[in-house]
Image (cartoon, rainbow, N blue to C red; front, side, top):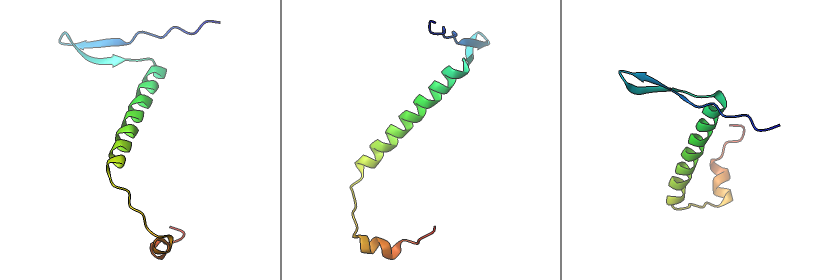
Length: 68
């Protein structure tokens, strides 16, 4: 069997200008996933710009509260 044909998005006009888009639900979910991926990459870039800070394990354990 061949791959199902994707539906063409429908553009809703208001006053002759594009105002909304109707997408197939799977295509909508794919768009959301791609947006989340971009947000994750942007956050990762921000983390990489900060200098790394290391602490001794014993110092960390003094401050760490178990069961939280």
